[in-house]
Length: 287
Image (cartoon, rainbow, N blue to C red; front, side):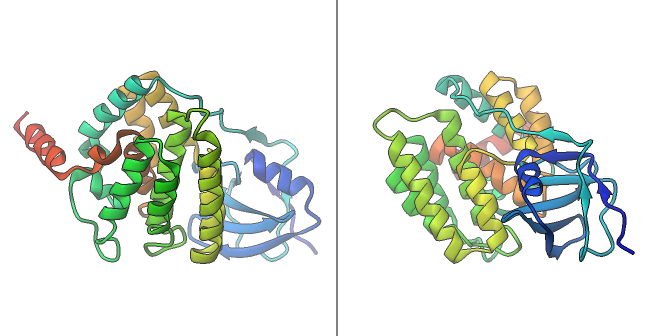
């Protein structure tokens, strides 16, 4: 007897489209807090109620003990679609990013490439990533898509885990481009840079990470990332701190990597400047 379908509580829009056209659901892999599936030719993932939403997320009351033969009932599920990331006032956005960077210690222990924001050297195998990360940050801030793509290639696939830290940093930096906007001269070139990186990711990183990176390159990611972008664009430091706190709790270091990429993409190399980070740290300790 086939098990009863799992009731879906909330579903991302990409997952909804995938399930609607799927003849069957095929398991890819299960982890402690999530399970990845293929449906309708697309990657989707199962998470428990309360997990961060994502266009590919399917949130259920509990994860099944067995993925083989699993079925889902999304007929009553609420559908989540991220709001479009609108171009923000550059000066206000930069001020909000600097304000958030100044209170990063409140978010807890930084991990992955997130430690670059605090002027520290990441642990192996990320210890040599500063040069490429800084080059990517500078290129994003200077609206230079060719240089950004070249620097990003050196980060894709870098780091352990299902979604390597380098992938998430690149995704965060390119996500920042939607906030910064591009002039008519470079908009097409940024689209070309994103296409180039999608091809690189398919060859160089984990297939699941390649899909999630492609989403970020298209301006879509986890709900806390979108909430953070909205708060920064509005110049609301308090809301940005709350959203950043939720973001940094995603994965082992994924949230921190995304945050580092986003701030670096807006602030440029200054976001990863050791001298500024050290000076801020001293100031924080003296208050």
